[in-house]
Image (cartoon, rainbow, N blue to C red; front, side, top):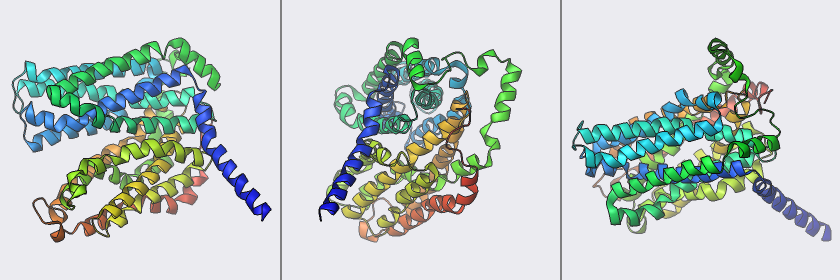
Length: 462
């Protein structure tokens, strides 16, 4: 009996140690990494705050109809993902600090144009206000296309083997915290000054983000962090610095990720499960406001925005418990845990099935998404982290486009507006969506032998 108690006690101690150790390690990381995390919270708040109000902004201030306003939101979100493909290499060429500062300056210019457009232009489709606001969106697209690959390249450069997994997980969690915070900050400002007033506040926060990178992530702070992490590369002294343009082109061609079939299979097989991310804004708002009545319908925004705050809480905890596990096996388990709860929604719309779906889907996301981003960053050859991150995000662009093509049709057919909930057939809609999502874990499992044979945990020269 005493032995059993001792075993349980040891198991509890081991679990607590495994859970707390990564947080302790991360707490002792550098000033530069602290600056990046603070910047990422500010940027997450600003980005999600703008996106959440963008369609209404185009309705009310630029006077576009719902279809055209929706296209503007799609132009921004899909444009950012596509920009990462072309601009992800910026950090490889100019270094992490310059890339972060350049990206935030582009975003500041974009948010300034967006905020000023209604006052300086005429409203209406293709009116001068519309053109000014689109210039603003392009600035944000360029900025964010550089910023996210640069942020993950920074984590790679400034963390050690001990702190890397938690460093990537915290960055992902902080992005989701940023997605939650506008719900607290934006409403009182909007009621007092309107949406344009909120956008000017977000432009001001972008200035704060620039100040964080400039004053906290100094050259010396980055150099100290790089030295601590055991990386001999200096910020601006890498292999590319001494190369001619022709040599750089040869280097990129030789190491370009599109030539790696395992890499390409790995990132594209994730598209089916990633459709569930897109359904968070393409389907869940309409589903919770149409298929439910009472508390859920009256407070549907709460349920739609529950995923980001759950991710913020759960991601570091899940990562702490699973950081030593094999990345590929975690991807199989995580995508399965994320996809399978979709079938719970196929049981019918009630608050219990909805909450079970949101909780388990979020746990699955916390299991695989940060590990995926870590894996892409770590297998990249030196000086190519940015381009690998950009290409790793390209399937996410396709997911947004593909899911948007059919989600509206499914809503009109199985969850139409102005229809009694009992006459809807949301069960079949979620059954189909669950069937799509499980293609990812099934594809990863079927390719396990082939993938593991050449699966890299880290680049050989990293």
